[in-house]
Length: 76
Image 1: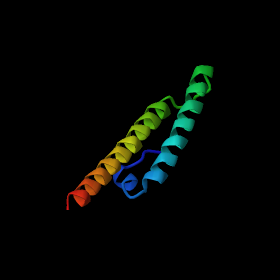
Image 2: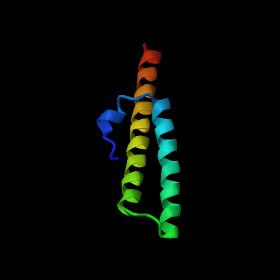
Image 3: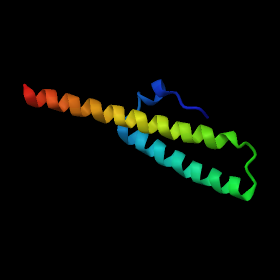
């Protein structure tokens, strides 16, 4: 399941953190399957890794936006 950044940007930071946690758990399970030789599609590992990176990138973007927003409010 490939995630789209534009869909992720609509979620809150808390929802994104939950999604990242779920993806990391799924990545761990896939890694175990790969080591045991039970993984049917090895590309799943790459897709999950990229999805985790996308989610973390969007989280950082949102945090930076909040910092900028707060700094502008303080300077007023």
